[in-house]
Image: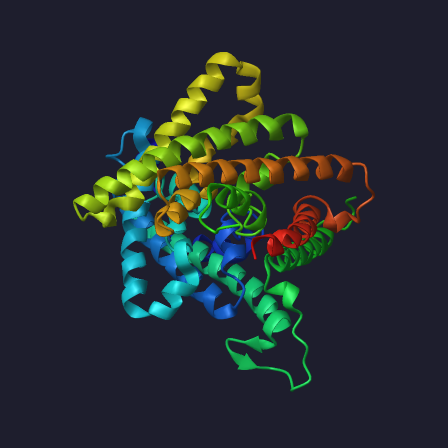
Length: 214
Length: 193
C-alpha cells in the first residue's frame, strides 16, 4: 500500500478548511444535494441535519481510515456503506431519544444520510487513503462545510418563507410570508442563487489572481 | 378516490408527491444524467427496474425483520438489497448494450446511492403498505423519476441554445429550471383532496 508507506504530509490548516469553502460539498462539488434541499425549509432543521451528517461523516471517516489496510479493494464500497449505515442507525435512534419533535420533522431523511454521496465520496476519496488524524480533521471540515451550506440555504428559506430566523420573528405584523420558499420550488431557487453567488466570487478571485488572463 | 386505492398510490408517487420535484430525492442522477434525452430515457428505465426489485425485496425483508424484532437492521438490509439489484442491472446493460453502458458511465453503479430508491423503500415501510400497494407505489415512483428526468433533459437541451449570463451557466441555471418544473408540479397538489 503506497498510501501508508509514503510519509504522510503533516496535518495543516488546509486539511480542515478545504471542506469549508474551497471544496464545499454542496456549493462547489454538488454532492449531498438531496438532504440539503429536503430539510432546509427552516434553519433549525438544516442545522440538525448538518450536525447529524457531520457526526456520521466523522465516525465513518475514523473507522474507514483505521480499517483502510484491511478492507479488500473489491468489496470496499459495500464495506463503506455498511459502516456508514451503522453510524446512521445510531444517529437515528439518538435523535429519536433526544427530540421527538425534531425526529418527526426530519422523518426518513435521517435514515437517508446513508445514501448521502458527500459521505461516501469522502470515504472513497479521502478516508481510505489517509491516516486517522488527517481523515478526522478533514471529516470535521467537510461536515462543517456541509452544515454551513445547509444553514445558509435554510436561513434564506426561513427568512423569506416564515419571516423568522431560528424561530425568532424578524419582521413586524404586516409581513406577508413568501410561502413559495418553504415549498419545494423554493429550495431549488435558493440553492441556484447561492450557486450564482459562489460562481461570482470564484470568478472575481480568478480575475485577481490572473489579471492578464481571459 | 380512496387514499389507499392502488390508482391513488400510483398517482401520488407519480405526480403529486413526485420523488424528485416534491421530495428532493435522487437529485444527483437527476442533475448528472439530464443533459441529453438519449441518456435520460435508459437511465429512467434502469431506475424503474431497480425500484421494482428493491420494493419487492424490501417488503419481504421487512416482514422477516418485524417477525424477529430486529428492525434496527432495516437500513443495512435494504442497502444490501439495492446494491445487489444495481449490480444485476449493471451486468445486464453491460452484456446487451456496451454503448449504453459507456454512456451512463459512473451514474450506473451510483444508482446504489440514489436516495430515491432507498427513500421509496423506507416510505413504503413507514406507510405500512401491503404488497400490491408497495408494487403500485414503486411503479409510480419509478415513473415519476423518469418523467422528471425526461422533462428536465428536454428543457436542458433547449437551454444549451439559450443565451444565459456567464456566471449562471451550468448547475445554477439547471437548478433554476428544476425550480420552475417543481413549481409546475405543485399544480398537481390539489389532485388528492
